Amino acid sequence: MYVVFYGLTIYSSLVLADYLTSVTNNLASQSWSQFAYLIAILALIYTSHYILYMVGVIIEHNLMLDLKKDLMKTLFNINSQTLTKSSTGKLVSRIASDPDLLVEKLETFISTTANAISYFATLCILIIINFWIGLISVVFLIAIALFEIIRAKSNKKYRRLEREANDDAISFTNEIIRSEKDIKGQGLESRLNEIAVGKFKKKCNIYKKRHYKSITLWYIRCLAIVAYIAVLLYVGMILLGKEAIVLANFIFIFTNREALQNVVWQYSNIILDYGEIKILSDRMFEITDGQLYPTEKFGDKEIENFEGNIKFENVNFEYIPGNKILKNINFEIKENEFVAFVGKSGCGKSTLLGLISKIYEANSGQIFIDKEDINQLSKEFLRNNINFLNQFPYIFNLSIRENMKLINPDVTDEQIIKALQYVDLWEYIEGMEKGLDTIIGENGVNLSGGQKQRLTVARSFLKNSKIMLFDESTSSLDNLAQEKIIKHIEENKGNKTIIMVAHRLSTIRNVDKIFFIENGTIVDQGTFDELMGKNKSFKKIFKSEL
Image (spheres, rainbow, N blue to C red):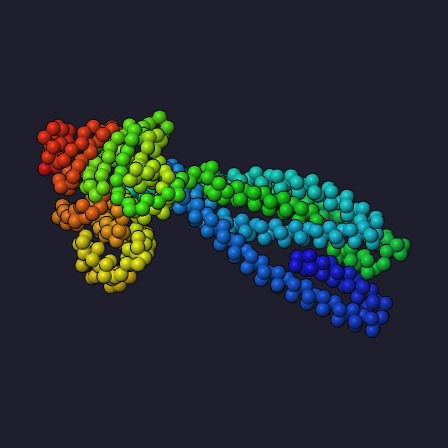
């Protein structure tokens, strides 16, 4: 289609030249027929352009959607440890913006390449028409091509630097938005504003340098164009005076002089667009190829008649190389046991739950689920059979009903209401104007800390998993609300394998077993009463709560 469009454009210039010659020579009958032919050609040009544009939109839409689907699929598979270390703002920029920019650049690249070919064809026609004018044009094109090569290389360098600086600025802005309460509460506005402005200033300075250099080269290029036009007119007049060229051909040459200039412009744009495409595709492939953002690794096994046994053998884990969080962990949790991990903050309790749910992967040792190595089990099996509610669960900017249905799309309103009643939240939601249809804002901004925690606990109750993991999931609640939720969790005792991490030891009095952790190592285990009788550190923690 591009070939048709640009071919017709060149051809229409030839028809226009012949038409003007006919008018000049008073060939009325011939000029009218050529006039009608020229109008038909022009109409065909724009018709082909319309079809080309419509087809292009469909192709661009599908490509853009496919790219975003692939990136989102990869996002959900990225290793959690990698996401913890990475800048989320930069990752968001790559997923949300780069596919759109890449598709736009691809469309421009294809169009520009086709355009350049048509302009080259024009140059060939010009050389055939008159060798001397063709030679002058070729010399001109070579001269300004040198400037374009310099401009393209410079632009590519600054484009990459500008995009990196922009990612950094967006990432920092994202952090500011997410932590605005802490910023205001501690009076950090002024200092953070300075840092943010500095990051944007860096990006703007690169932008300024890129454009300064580009504008300077553009000005030199424009002076070269003026020189070319002057020479073209001068030589053309001499050739017309000597009747070495007919008026129609000179009209064709002069009206297509911009096309000749565009041979170089388009060559430069092809280089620039290719550079942009390479940058954007590299940024996206860095996500999908698993190099910069390693993905989770799972097996393909599933366990029939799943019981929910868990066993750790000599497990070690570290977030930062050389700084072990868990050291030589060994324990076993049997089917339907209700156990708890206890210890001071930072001792590795939450990390243990992350390893059981395979959010994290052990650096060494083995984890078994029903005697199967956890690394051999499929992602679907683990996610469906393990329900992990962490200390700071996220609530999405959806309605309450939509948030609850995320964990189980088949639940009814009656089941949702029952779960909300378990956590003493239904009465509050029922009093809202829109009830379950209330939009609760990004991360539940329209709810208090305790209400957010109640809602996420209620949501977890709607997932019927064999293994349930609770990481201080009631830490923001008062004692009465906490006792009621713990009581409901205890109702599953004997039917599910339940593991809790808790700071308040009073909430785990009735568990079957407690593992006491110090400095990343399990130093003791037993029932609540057993540890109170034999472990002084455990007893000290309990007394501090009274």
